[in-house]
Image (cartoon, rainbow, N blue to C red):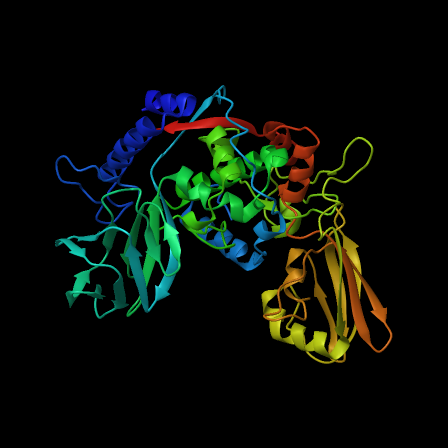
Length: 484
């Protein structure tokens, strides 16, 4: 199998790559049935392709705990911040040479939860769709409407076909990989799995090749950048691939590996695929970061504001040698992310309104007791070395409350629709006339690992993707994944 991967990586022959990838996915899904419920098995002669925050110890309980932390982060989708015009032509056709040592992983398709515990969903394609269950296969006309039913079944309606029920889980496939599956308004490569986790609800899981998954992640996470920043796009590709393989290792026995939102990585399917990011993914094919004998935890954020953060300062727990606070500046002291629109920012509230926000959301934050009373004062008491708030005192008519760490962002939410969390925990508190509270801060995100806007500036300054990765992830090594 490593010979196959080497051929694909070095020569990029389109037709050969498609055939070999098809063979590989067929091998994976047939050998590991618990990973893909009811994997499609093409008839003889069929050309169909069977595509199908981090856990250091890969234990289910720890994975659930860390997923909860990552879900609570609720970061924005930063992709739209970094948009540039598409390049003309293929300026990056240089041959890629794989000179990194190998690292063995379970190279199976990735399973991405798209919609979880919903009542219904519509699936369509430009080709016929076949539904495969443990009781056989059925081919439907498009579009197909699925609705949660009683027991472990789903009610199915499609044009020209009588209404019927199917056992769950069921796998939706198309015979030709050039035809995509559409769920709602989004298109996806690979297959869709419909399953049930609770009564009268269904979930949709996209199962596809990891490299195809990245095509729907990288543009959403770092934006549609041009030629001058392709090394930063490669950085994002490696970080996103590393994150994916670590989640896959942690969730091997679960029904899905990660979700399609900021709770893991933003994944939008085929509609966001972009030439520069596709090339960056191809030129870093199968490369991940490792530390020692384990896959690294590849966290990243939009804008560090000058210094990244130690992971234990942000989320508590044990320190990790490769997720250390660094000064993100060049030799002249110029901060790489200084051109970010979120490098500095300001928020202000009417004191009474901020008090209501804190009362509503204090259970989401690391606060000594639920906030109540009328807000009188907020004072920062202690900071981490990176400048982010370690603890602050909040005084109300009912007493004094303590809050700190990154969770303070979940308390001091912005006065916007849905009350998004504060951009960063690196801030200063001021007061203004009329009883207003003003907070001035720097950066956007938790601050751990790669600073995306910093990576873009480093790329434009001439650093390559390996230099950038090793600047943000101290002591990591790059490895090429190969199957176990």
